[in-house]
Image 1 (cartoon, rainbow, N blue to C red):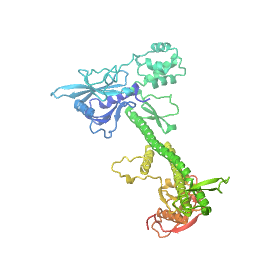
Image 2: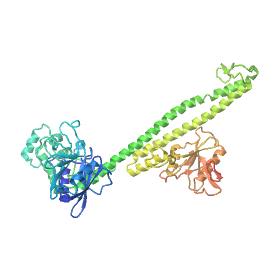
Image 3: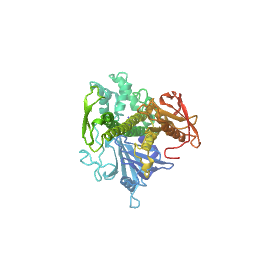
Image 4: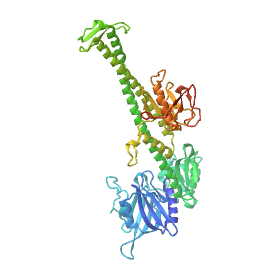
Length: 575
């Protein structure tokens, strides 16, 4: 429950106390559906918000608004007609969610004034803000134009006579007595909130439900009447207590705002305010923040899903490439068979058929030859194809491992985004995504070179191994928890603060070549507090011997079975 007839009744009471006889100094359009009016009274400057938003239509006093649109025809039009005008009346039209503000504005003719009426209709998607000439009743302008294509019953256009929104005939809640109430109850075979809402003016669905909730026996007219009198007492503004209800079990999500205690919402906390405007300010701040959090979370999820989909498709493609690269063994076998049959091959022969000693059935195999080459050159040609295919297989295995590693990182971010409950946390995650190039940078003038396309800083060793470097405590943790496998090699400067370094070993080779170990050690030394020393000790061990203690700070680990290299810090390509 948010902005209903009861809430507006209390807002009007608040506005009368604060704004009557005030002078309009400025009108600013905040967005396509909202304006803020600056009003000066004898002792204070006030700002009145009027919003025709489809979900958050409302009006109340606010603090100084943030800058709105620089140019706005509607705000300029209002300033022309009501600028410097004096507020002479503030009222709610019947029991509708309609506010009427009468303004005595100065005309161009000296000593003459003319009355304008600013009307706010706060009814969901039908909300509007309308300026009417009081003498003629004609609409001068509105924030939304409604023509016959949008509504067959009621047009809101300049020059059209203003008519209030049509409402079904209902009973006046303040004039309803016990006999009429009992008669109303008896007319319905079963009393439910809809029958009360449809027949009694001013009762919103939430208030009608509250009435039934407060009656121990909803079928007893006396108990319903007692509950009804409790609810109706809050229609007297001095009796109301502006409250915002929040759910403490869901990070204080906003549930409702009302001057009436709402007992139907169990397990919620209520926040008290001095005025209805203060309560509405707090409530809608929470609502808008929650919606912004959901929107930002959705944007981040979309970015992650897109990258996960790309990684999935890349793995499928690389797996197909790997199947093709598996032909390397065929090339080796053909080279070996040719070598064993060199005495049988004549130069210029296009093919040779020989028994395949490597096949289980020892079946015969036909081997294509290049007639321009000698038998030995043909054999060497197959060995070269074998070596090339083997290197390609290693590269493809490396790429597949990297793709799986990226998937793990992305999945960890999916969990992090889901658990983030505040705008600050989501903005921090978005900044990370922007730096990694996963989301486009919104800031103007930032060059593409300032974004980084990879998750970790990476290097390729002389032996073709991929070396990953964590750039902060979080990435150090990700490197160990999400990426490292037991046969990867882990490095870190000995008793010196620095980055975690990982040598990826997707083929599970029993050892890492020394040139690769030395390069990774130099990188680890470079990304440490000892980077300016001439010789830095760097420990290395298999990743399976590195353990992160439960509850320890980010980046903190224990490791064993290590060996130590003493190296000069440096990056590949530097001296």
